[in-house]
Image 1 (cartoon, rainbow, N blue to C red):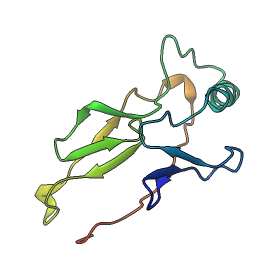
Image 2 (image 1 turned 120 degrees about the horizontal axis):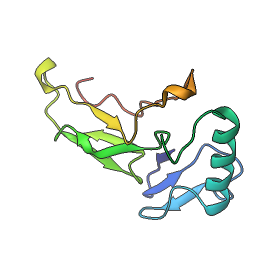
Image 3 (image 1 turned 30 degrees about the vertical axis):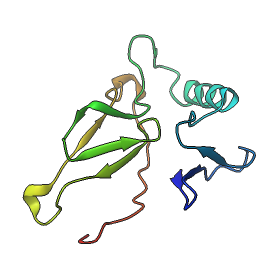
Image 4 (image 1 turned 135 degrees about the horizontal axis):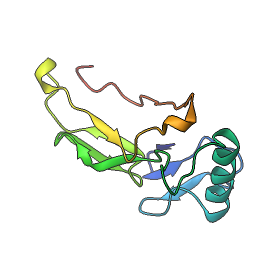
Amino acid sequence: MQINRDGLLHSDRRDTGSGCLALGEPAFSYQQEHELNERLKRLYPAVNEEETPLPRSWSPKDKYSYIGLSQNNLRVHYKGHGKNHKDAASVRATHPIPAACGIYYFEVKIVSKGRDG
């Protein structure tokens, strides 16, 4: 998902209707959330999410101060100087990957490298 010039969140998914959400609205509809939950149950049948939840977003509590979060903690932006290695920052997910997953897959899309890369 990414924000377009109008400040709307655009989803790459084709089944979301218009594919845009106004800022501040939920990132997923009830139907999309249900479909996601069902897919995760099929992909990780050994995981009991009540005991060991899957990571679903970035943690607002476990991040460096130069990191900002938006879009329901699904989007990360860097607020630091970014001039040298001392300006590095990190963020963790809300939950660790449960050991019962075996293999866990996720993707990160870099939208912009910033002015200084």
